[in-house]
Length: 537
Image 1 (cartoon, rainbow, N blue to C red):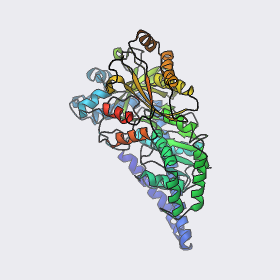
Image 2 (tube, rainbow, N blue to C red):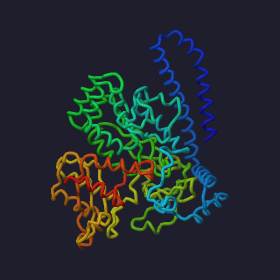
Image 3 (spheres, rainbow, N blue to C red):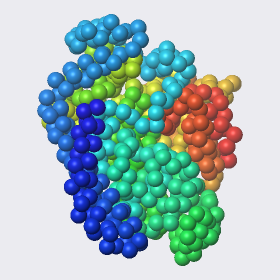
Image 4 (cartoon, rainbow, N blue to C red):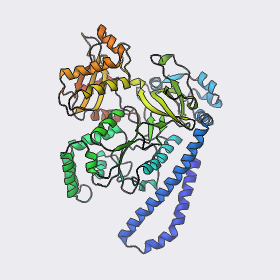
């Protein structure tokens, strides 16, 4: 990594030295306002040339590593072993794959968390990731984004509207000159949104994750008049009464297509993909961001960047599993027999059409950690698999051993909501009845909390439709319901902002991970009660 930074600094220094003599003469001939414009233009040109150079270099490295994936994974394992800390350090001297697998048993993420922190969540080390994969995801993602959507990276073309960024690795100067209306690192969500609203020429909207962007648009509707007044009064910046009027007019027309009414040149929404984001993407695409493309530069988990997105023009959710650090293994998923599977495969051994659970080994603690994230192999890039993320095993519901997975439940809930006239699903969370202690005198069941648009009350007929859809989706669940071993799912409608407040509470927790994966199944009573107190129907 030190060598990478050295080459980068040398390149930037050489570029600046070549540009300085002729530009200094030109600068002396310009008035003050022109000098400022000239400086911004210079910064942009330097940043763009540096990005093109870095992207070409990273693309070459990726080609080599994916063509020789066995050697690349061996190097990644060696790096993890050399940097390992803790009681398993004696393995540092061996990079034999059989020894590695035999001496280090597979460990679930929940076990690792209990061992290292004694809590359910691990303390975050940073709001961004380190390592080759995160750098590749950022540099190649920026280059691919500009190629697919020209002018997106022009000065003032992009605005970040959340405190966290979708780019896994923050880049130093001069890349700051490429896109941002407001500087990365700003922490006030209100100020970030105001800066974006003051810029009607945006071509790309950035947010840390899709659920965070969902909260931004919900808040925009709730606080629209206050934001319009601030823009009209020039708080901050110069007064923009015409822009304030445009904001009010756009909000009056409702949520559908709001983003394009506010920013007519908008082309793409950039968010970081992580667990539990698909529902928010669907809601944004159906309402506020209708007509816009979505792009995620990477798929991130608590262990690091595990997937690179090199195809902005493709539907969201297509990722290359890179062979570098963290070291990735694939555990074949067999229905109903996850606990019996013990043999992992390497990236080059992945088979198209098969599903695997990701196993990560990082250098900070030498543990072969089963993340619970399940992927399906849909293709190949040289010798590396290209995958779609399917679900998280840790987000399954099971009150009688029925094991309703995250993908299965989401499918059933989606079909149920389609039968609720006028309803659009924004968010949901599930709780097993034992967590809320709500099964006294009745069979164990699911408590389901939903946030909707277009429907203010849920009839009993609507509530029953979810249970019917679950029975159609899962024969095992249907059998348990027929025998009376499991009670009907109970559906509750929560008020506006309930899930946003839940996410804020989760983010405020000292042990909150990054990225902020959205839990769909709540395992703690206080979190379930958090939503229960906000039920409106």
